[in-house]
Image (cartoon, rainbow, N blue to C red; front, side):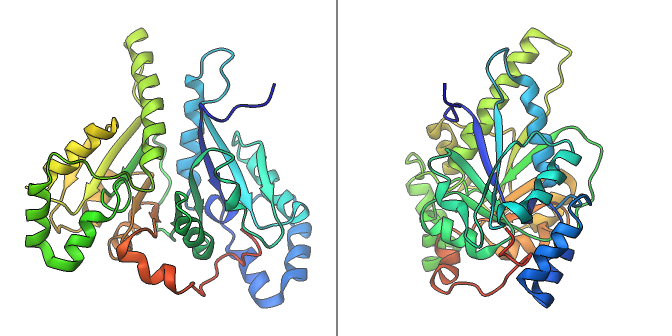
Length: 325
């Protein structure tokens, strides 16, 4: 019987997001592809250090202990890489070294495998390569660029996920009003449409799948009052009253939930993120992420009107060599 991905939370991740590939990237950029291949071969038994998204992935995979007997894992993480299979072997050995329950991978030499996201039922693809992320997002695929972060791993076994609202969980329709008419027109528009839910944004399905795992935790706690909930979800948005009402109404209409909501109205998100300490934070605006990435692993979702210039002009920035995703 084929392995069914429909009922699981499936995430694709590039090695550039999962591991620290700074040294590998330096070899690729300064010495070229052949030297890079030799470097990986010479270091095949030297495990790669954890990267920015590693704490998120590690904790997410631990939630597979909520699976019922015979059900299989609730979470499936699949490596999507530009490496060829030979140079990708070091990545898989590093996965094994760190005890990550990742057994599936796609290696495509010099090409991004994001095209396989729909057939693999992925609700999220994470990479440090902006080109791949922008291309995926332009095809309405849920992708995010993991940014460099000063985050220091902690011993907390919880998993805290935080989302911006507009351009992440919701589409960018309200943001378009904001960009065109300013804050006053934005609030007036949201008041007038308070009972009309927003259309879902790129990570809406991802939140829906996360909620499914949260419901499993709630059922576990009903059976075992001593069980401690591990998965927590927040929205951290620049909205404030009165525009908060439509955001809450949209969540209800979509049938998704969050544990906490921060309606900041222009307060620096980084200050709140430093206290909240999410293991991953998603936002569509780079101005916010400059601050938040100093405090927590942060992901840029290049979606909507605020990122239209990125979609029109393909970025030239390359990270971790990428032939080496």
